Length: 355
Image (cartoon, rainbow, N blue to C red; front, side):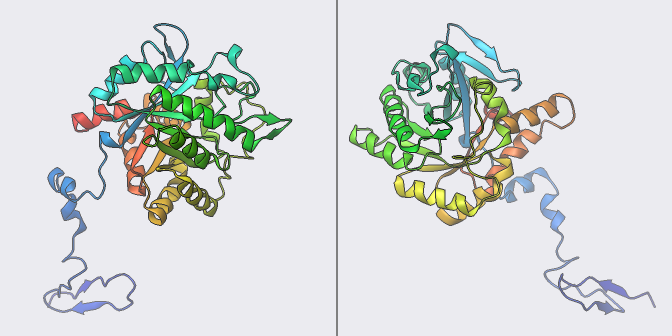
């Protein structure tokens, strides 16, 4: 007689089934269930994939600089370029032809134009407003997302105006509403306040609606954390050296999750059409909670530090380049509807090639 064959029971049960003859196959466990069957070839893997990444999920952040015919590399972000306003549309066209639906604009303001109150943000001919008009003139179907905050324009590098070491909330919100109006008037499709001042979403919504821009969306940076992952971005917009202190009095504590839910709820009540989590990878739990709790269009920003560490590791051969799409798919799996990523063009090319 052959030795008894042991059939492993379902997890959580103590007893073991022993048969002296033919193995009794119980539905719901091995060997009846073999999870590897649905991984055995490319066709079946594609059919049963629970989440899919497409170009429709991508927003490409772009940096703008003064001058003509300028394409300036950002040293701390390999492959990322600052474009002057006369060539920004040409660069955006590459994304448009790949099917990327949106770009997001961020200015590198001349240090001589920066002031303590960030008044350059209110110039209807500033870099962002000029870039909006140029892009929309050549690519009217490309969605343009515009950052609303004062840090690119202030001499102290903060997102609001200051009184001593205090960031003034209501005075800042008043400036932000004017900044948002100028961007909408220039043709911006989606206003994206990143400042984290209290009440700014409602104030901006009120001004937009009263000015006839009721179709202009608000994508609020609702859960923006005081993170160490922003360094390369601050290089890209020229605020790193200028920043006085830190931003912990208005950006969120990385330890907090319930607080993010309160921020999201308030922004929705104030009229946000979409909400965002920033940074991305360290905060996937926040993305999941937002999607499960509110069912809102939820976006995530794969920020400059995330980009730089992945790009740098790939360039050095420490990581395979497949981590680009893997990282983006992770945001989708967590519940994000879209991702702002500096990998947007590279990812779109990989998706088009079937990588």
